[in-house]
Amino acid sequence: MHKASALMLALLTTITLTFQSIAYAKDVQKVRFPPMQSADDVTHSYFVSLLSASLAATEEEYGKAEVEVLPTAYDQRLILSLLNHQGILDVVASAPTAERERRFRSTRVPLLMGLLSYRMFLIREDKLETFQQITKTDQLQKLTACSAEYWPGTQVLTQAQFKVRVAANFQQMFDLLLAGECDYFPRGITEGYGELHAFNEHNPELSGQLIAFDKVLLRYPLAVMFYTSHDNFELAGRIEKGLRQLQQTGDILKLLKKHSSSARAFPLSQWQDSQVFELSNPVMPKVVPTDNAALWLTLP
Image 1: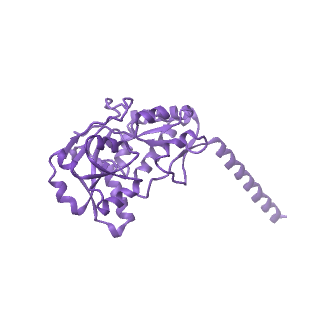
Image 2: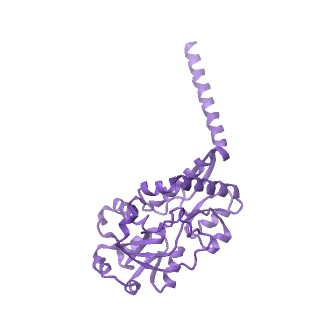
Image 3: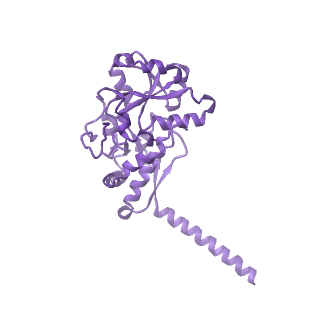
């Protein structure tokens, strides 16, 4: 009898936990987000952390929500269009353009606080002397940059008469750089060091062949913002409200300073001896708040 009672208790406990799990799943909104572009895409976890924090900041008003990173990688050229297919994807982090603003709903808070505008370079170690001799823009224009076809930075560089080798995806840019098909891979100062560290960890046999070069920087206004479909206006409003709360409390800057992908960019005073070549960005829409010092940092 005692054994039967124990079995019944175990069964009831299992049933209770199952129903609690189902109830929890119904109560918690899942916010679907794309997976990493590659194993070296270290900024991805920063975006996931920031999105999660914005949902947590608005939980009292909107209820529980969790970020669900999708298991399947999609073609980056098509990823934004999936926002308009209900049930596949809810949020994407992307650089704003006029077309993206028209087709999708952006949260008007730059996720990297404008620091993406400053572009350091990943280069081959055997090219270091060449880059150390650069003092003028036209010297850099004679070299070839790696960039993705769908990145706004590609259009910025080509319109400024820079040579660009277009890559199909994020990982291919490392391959092209190693193969000598391009000379440098421009990365935001909040990205480059973390990505190089990840690349060396994942490719120990190639460690040391690529290095970070930051004595010359390109600067053109560039941002990343969260996008949803226009139909998902409540989620977009929630995320933007959460981001603005995080900005007001200083938590976005705190995350930037401590996250493994971006911590190396701080303190910003370290960049004062770097030479900066200024370019315009004709594809960035005016909705990006570049004139708001609370949302948009500049190097000293």
